[in-house]
Image (tube, rainbow, N blue to C red; front, side, top):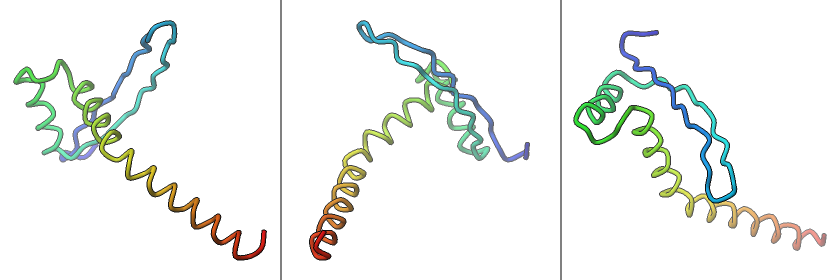
Length: 90
């Protein structure tokens, strides 16, 4: 481990929504030291209960923010593929 890296593991436990049990996975991440210190400061100041919660929230926000953009990209690719297929007579 380099001195300028911060390591954390996100342990996301299984949880139940209604009758459905959602399976979770563990992801290991290495962060630059400065970013790791910021994560640590959020926990120390009481904003989050632990580092895993900070990283889960950040990933959830990233996915929420980019979901529409990704869907748009996939739709455009599908349309291009369909137009190309139509032009070639398939």
